Amino acid sequence: MSVTKDDVRKVARLSRIAVDEAHLEELAGELNGILGWIDQLNEVDVSDVEPLTSVVETALPMRDDVVTDGNIQDQVLANAPRTEDGFFVVPKSVE
Amino acid sequence: MTDLTKLTLADALDGLKAKKFSSREITQDFVQAIEASRVLNAYVVETPEKALEMADAADARLAKGEGGKLEGAPIGVKDLYCTKGVRTTACSNILGEFTPTYESTVTQNLWDEGAVMLGKLNMDEFAMGSSNETSRFGPPINPWRRNGDNAGLTPGGSSGGSAAAVSGDLCLAATASDTGGSIRQPAAFTGTVGIKPTYGRASRWGMVAFASSLDQAGPIAKTVEDSAILLDVMCSHDPKDSTSLKVDQPDWRADVSKGVKGMRIGIPKEYRMDGLSKEIDALWNQGIEWLKAAGAEIVDISLPHTKYALPAYYIVAPAEASSNLARYDGMRYGARVDGNNLTQTYEATRANGFGREVQRRLMIGTYVLSSGYYDAYYLRAQKVRTKILNDFVEAFESCDAILTPTCPSPAFAFGEKSGDPVEMYLNDVFTVTTNLAGLPGISVPAGLSADGLPLGLQVIGKVLDESACFRVGGELERAAGFVARPEKWW
Image: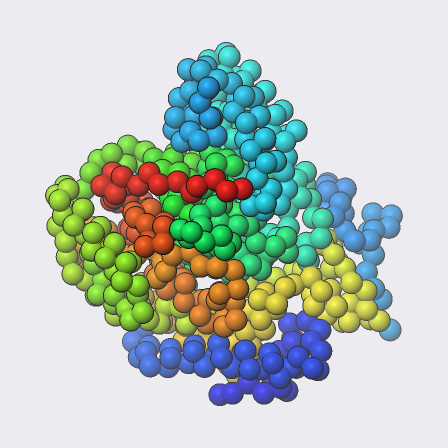
């Protein structure tokens, strides 16, 4: 499998990272270098194993379904690039 | 008067308790040392006022005969840990001037035990790097230099600021974090001790996330004993992190002096790989001889899937990073760059805020998770991870701990390996296996290279057996008698 300029354009879009047309070729080369090296994993026979989901076997803990936090609007908004009347201000997203 | 900044954490705690000096005095000394050492670029935020305030509070408690396990001890904090009211950016532009309104569990544990915060330490952007060259603030510089050569060397990464600060006597010890070797490799490059505990020992709450199934907190310190003291405080069960383990914490500090008599030490043949420098190979053999002389039994073991660890890591880590870093959209916090519409705003914010290496990894992560490739890459990598874990499980049937080099080379110069990503990634070849398998690993300085740079040996323990790391690490430290210090040039 080889990554093309089109693949990079698509992946950049999925990653929500603006990439100049001029840099697509270079990035494709870098990604191919890394993915080519990763391809050696195909040598490993993995037919007999399950994917690893947890390195130390434990059951996921349960907690009571109660509110333990909240009423901290000032803190939530403290680092926002733009706020107004206690809301985040974001670019228009519905035409 | 003795230079208080040169004390070990253990000696400083004794001196504080015995009132030989106050926390204000030692804190003041560190504040001055940090100011005078800015050329090392170890700290990205200095908090001298907060430090002195905390020191005075510690002195008040010490005066009453009270105080916690770290009472009055000045510590540096990797910029990965959220610290309330103190800018935290993981050294990325995308976090702008982000100032947390909460404290990470690990750092809260330190303050609860009386530690004093000196400031935030430099690191690779989002902990992605092995040379600290991806930091938005530029790299910290290793206090060590090659004999007769003034070239600046990397202190390693991603916890390069932590390692440079400890090695340069700019804190008694520091917090760090390790996703593929980011505690142990910088420790090896700077003649310091670093331990990554078992996954789940320390809470990840309030740590800026990179790869959640691999990230683990740990200390960098001057001695094995110091690392045990700090690790003990950093680790805790935390309901706010669902992967945090509810397990007993042994007396690790006591383990350091227990010796290795009767222990079986495994030597994995696959780690003797092509291209391993002769001096590192020789140091490894020396380590084997030291442990033998101390009464350990040496066992040859095999970890057949070792060579697949790094490629598996470079699927799993970027995949998890691409999910974790999706939160940086410029809407709720961090630096926003406006575009003509919402999508363009996202794309401009992220193109501007993330550095080159982070962008590369996010794209790799997105690619391996994208439809049609998930099974071929991500699922396969997670299966290879099971194979790697099984290798360790089998090996530990015949040994109690594993001895390896920490890194394939000593510290290198800036720019030396930044041309080819894969070459940079190979730095983590000996450390990354324990992240994939969740095992504890410690790096201990054990000797010097021909050109005068520190070299480290790594001890890997079974799951939750940090005690074995501290026992073997302590023995290596005693046998090596490593006392070399960087000659002060800064």
